[in-house]
Structure formats: structure tokens, C-alpha cells
Length: 273
Image (tube, rainbow, N blue to C red; front, side, top):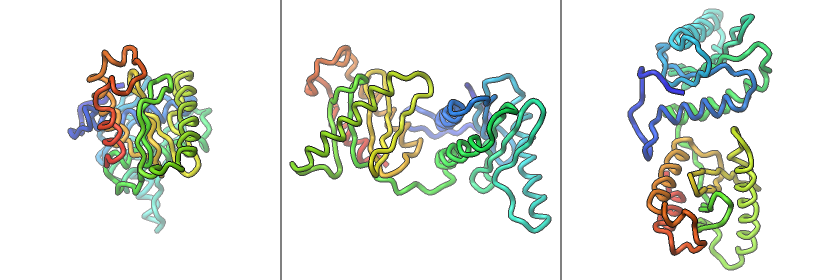
């Protein structure tokens, strides 16, 4: 899925443009629901920022008219003295269009779905995606999420190295062993799945997020949901590591000393902002 050049962002994180990260959020949203024709993000003027449409639709017309629909709905509410809606639903015979406000009107998140799509589930998924989009677009303050553990594993679940912010005492070994078992199984299960496989799960009072490269996986344990910009940066660092160690990883001999930069990688991910 490619986006039009209008309003293209120029800042980067380890080789991934902001535009590609936003499209990634749209693609992840679409995988969660049946009947999604496509989705997009538009600026306050109704111009496309990112395009996630899989079906042949006039993107500019869809986003501009949808943005106008959101603005019109807000004007109606303001006229009668009520606070404007964050979500507007347009229903037609062939499709429903749902427009979600982003950044208090700075942009909008638009989804076109088939008539049979369940609105309750659609709204939940749009709310979750909208939060990630607002973070990526810089409409919200960075969350106070703390990275606690970083595991570097092969895609088969073998541990290469690990770094911890808190598990530093010998008595923590049993906790680490139990945690490692859960993380390894999570990695194996994730790679048995197909498109749309879960890459994030809750574990006790932390979340585990998998960042998967060609041959290795980072399992990042944090106190909350990671920003997509952070995840994209972690993926870039992992890909750089894999590029430096391509020969040693094909196949890996099981010795961490045969790889260059393992400690630097996990330390960077642990302390990355």
C-alpha cells in the first residue's frame, strides 16, 4: 500500500519514514477486522497523509469528503451548544464510512467498511489505532513507559543475550528462568501463525512486544504500550545488527561470542527513548 505524496512527512527513524510507520498502523488495524475496504489518515484540510486502501477507490474524494463530514457534524453540535463528536458514522447501502478525529481536529482517521461490519468491535479497534496514530503524528505527549527487560533471540526461540533493568541479584534467577520460558514460547507460537499473528501480549504487570527481523527477534518487556516510533527504531537497530552478522547467523552456532554487537544492541533498546 503506497501513500500519495501530499503531506508526506520527512523525519525518519532508523530508515523507516513516518509515512511508512503510519501505513503500518493502518495495515495492523485492517488485519483485526473483517470487511474493511480500506483506511486512511488525512490532515485538517482533507488532504491525504497516509493511504491504507486495498480496494480501488478515489482516495482524495474519500478523505476530503470524510473530513468535511466530520467538520459539518462538529458544526451542528456547536450550533446547538453541545460538544462536538470525536467519531462520525456515515451509512450507505454499499458501505459505512467512519471518521475518527485525531489531535483535536488536526487530522482524521477514516475507515471504509462493508455494511455488515460490527460497529462495536470496529469502534474499539479504531480507538486503539487512533491512539497509536496520535502518538506517531506527535499529537500526544510521550507516555511514561519504562523498558524493564530486553531479550534477543533467534526466530526459533533460542536465547542469544538478555539485559535487565531490575533483575540483577542472584535470587532473581528463578524469576528470570520463568520469564524466559514464557517469552520463548511466545516467540515460537508467533512464528507458527500466519498474517495478523499477535505480536504483543500481557505478562503479569508488564507487556511483551516482539520486534521480528529476518533471523532474530527482540522481545521487549515494558510497563505499558510502546510507541510505534520506538518499535520502528528498535526494528531498524535489529536489522542493522543482522546485517553486520549475516554470515554468523546463517546458521548461528549457539555461541554469543560469534556475534558482534549483541550487548550494544540490547543496551540501546533498553535505554532508547
